[in-house]
Structure formats: structure tokens, C-alpha cells
Length: 438
Image (cartoon, rainbow, N blue to C red):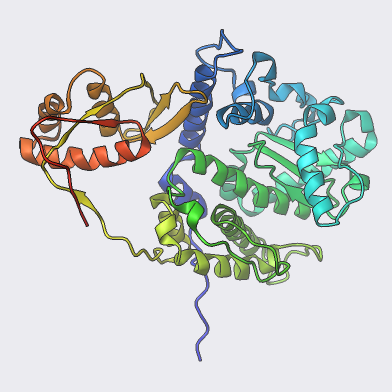
């Protein structure tokens, strides 16, 4: 009997950077929220060409923009609340903004209510959670000191990892321990960039919470800008974590996020020497079990390749050393062009500095946003002015190939654009149907 090999201890920050450096992820994320705000101009007729980082990185503003994109609300300029509205400069923790102003509890009430509802569901708290702020005097000052020590500890132990993750954290809120119940830390999904943690007792608690929740924030940014999940991901069967209650089921996205977080915790725990006893941790710490749980989650994900995007495949291969299994065959279209392809809705394009990534916005109600390749963007721009047949010579020259070969390649591009709805088809007289061969 042999023991299964554990996850590969690869360089997680380097793997993240291979998909996209943190600077590129932040640039693309900001471009997405900027374009979304422009398309949601209803109550914001004078949106600046470039929103201030204080606003565009703010979990409060991103929450409102997200609600408007989902069709749950109408965005107004008054709702674009910046980080500085809740975090004073003097309370910054090694460049990490901390919610400190007394009004933070009101402004972040939505996030606190989300956490409170989950705690009540688990019967883990009896009072709504509240933030410690400057109004709490020494309690807040003491918590801030431990928080700073925790960031310093994380940077001593795993400097590349913590800096890689904290680049995606916009705001930290410290929960009053008297109103926290069994709460430890959380990243409320509806408030991207926000981390909430219970007022810490030790620097290692802080370091672990920041690694854990920072890993979620990193993955959140990757999920909205890169290819982690595909169009079929919602059809994937849920996962039951064996360490959780029987009825607890995680959808694919949550399982992927948990696997990524446990992988980062395992990396940090290894660097800190937790298993070797070099670092004492509390009884509730996840560091001692992070490696085992990341392996369980990773093995489950390896069987879900049909529901994962190419970047998720890359993450799994990098951390486990194996690519997810897939059952699909690659499809291709015949070279017979049977329809004309048209762009019915004027589109907005944003090229964000990456060589082959373009953000496209459709000004619908609510707006829709897509990440596509540069070739696909050029094709969309051409189809807004001319027919598909007239666009073929441009790509034959662009790709330096014969017209027939360029046509075949273009139809593969069009398959994804038609499936997304960015392009529609209009029958062309005298042609037969386009067929797909699998």
C-alpha cells in the first residue's frame, strides 16, 4: 500500500503571475468597473474618464456597481463611496486601509448583516456584529497594533505570498470580539476587496486570516477578469466537504475558492514551520490541516475539468502537477460560410495594456461585459462596418495566410462570439447551413 503524493509545493506567486501579474489584474479590474460605471450612467451623467482609485477600489462602490450590473438597483453618483469615507489615514496598517471612522458601521452595514445572517444560520452568534473604530479608543488601538504585527509576521515568513495577496485587499474591518460569537474572518462576496476579521489576540492569527481571506480576494479578481469557470459551471454537481455538516454542500466556485485558499495556507504553514512545531497556533487554526484539505479539494476538482476554464486548469496543474480531466472533444466549423454575421448593438471597447485581452461592453439594461481576444475585438469592430465576407481579406493579411484558411479560423472565432450574443446571424441567400463537426 502506497501513500498518495501530496500537492506540489510550487511557487504560488509565480504561478499567479503566469496567469496575470497583480498589477495587470488590478488594471483590468479597474477597467471593468470603470466601463461598467460609464454604461450605468443613469444617475451618474458626469462619470470622470478615470475614477479615482479611492472610489474604483472601494468595496462600497464595487458593491453598488455590482448590484446595478445584476439589475438589482439603479446606480447613482452618491453611491460611489470611497475607501477614505471609512478608513482614516492614521489607521492605515502598513499601506493596508483599516475601517476606523465611527460612520464605518453604518456604511458597511450591508457586509456586517451578511456575516451576521451566516452566523445566525450556524447558531454561532446572538448579536449583530459590529466594527471596532476610533470611537472605541484603546480597544481599537490595541487591535490595530496586533494587526500591524501580524502583517509584519506574514512578511517575514512568506513575503512574496503575502504581498501578492494583499495587492487585492482594499479594506480591512476589525469586528468587536464582544459581538463576534464564533466568527473568525470573512470576505463578503458582495463587497469585493473587503476583509472582516475578529479582533485578533496574536500576530499569527492575523497572518493566517490575511493569507486565507487574501487568497479569496486574489481569486475574486481573477474570476472577473480571467478564465476560471466556463458557461457550464453552474451545472456541476456540488461538493460536500467531509469536515463539514452532512447537509453542507459547496458549489463549484466556492470549492475552487476554498481549494485555492487552503493551498495558500499550506504554503504559509510550511514556511512558518507549523507542522514542525516551530510556530504555535491556536486550536481553531486551519494551518495544521491546510495541506490535507487542499489535497482533498484538489482531487475533487481534477474530475471537474469540463466545468473549469483554462486558467483554472493552469492553477490545478501548477499546484498539483496534473491537469483536470475532460470528456469533451474540440469542435470545429466547416469552411462553408452560410450566414452573414452582424453586430446589432453598438459596443464599447477597452484595451487594458495586455497584448491579447480586450474588454467589451454592451450598453443594454443592465449592461453586459465580456473579455475577448484582440483578434475577436478587431473582428467585432469590422462587423460593425462591413460584412463578414468583406472582413476576410483583412484577417488573411493580418494572419499571413490564404483566404480559405483565414475563413476557417474566423469561423472558430465567430462560434464563441455568436454563443455569447455579441454577434447575431442573418441568413444569406443562396448558401447552405453552417455545420459543426465534433
